[in-house]
Image (tube, rainbow, N blue to C red; front, side, top):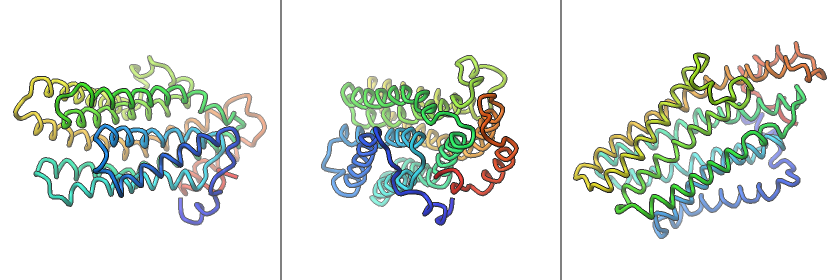
Length: 316
């Protein structure tokens, strides 16, 4: 998407009954960004962790809202502002010249958010644009994705809030609480991202599909990463209970590996999304209920739109 295509979008599409959700999304984005630049040190670690957890789950909620009302500039700006805010937050730690293991750890964390801006923002725009294209071209209901995913988003929000409070309540050391909370976020988000793509096609939206031979290699990799993040969370609990002398160093190394896996996930996801979303579009074309459009025109334009990353024909 280039700047010209971005300008063609409305700043904020009419949201109707979803207006309160849009106001909540805007308010949380402003609060999270402002606190990051002004008063992050004056708040307790549990408050900051909870705030950043809510800011992170704010993005998929915004996507679900836009899946019904259409993509607008506000959604794109939300993605960019969130990425830039996290880059500033991480950079502020690096410039303090922390110990070597922390410096490497935060440098990898910085790389994660650079990859978010370079790859994951494009992936999210492509996902939403493709779904909206199916809504306009194939006549599927704009509420389809929201109905399939919203309950999973609620589960994601519940787990993020619960794990954050749980971590800072039972742990003896704040370091391990932060470590476990930072492991829980990629665990739940990896599973949620995988669900977003599997839910697009009825034959893949089943639990047994994940353990079949038809699964994509990236889907297996996402499951592997989720297992790794879960193991890290358990390691953090064990180290906090046993008070290992070298526990913090080992946790730092494991966290660096986790950040490396996250960067691979987001780079690979972009290429996976192109193939998976094309499959979704052609499934819409083959749907007998979708008879009000020219299937050959849609099929022809699909490849062109994917190559140009064009949004101008996806949204009103």
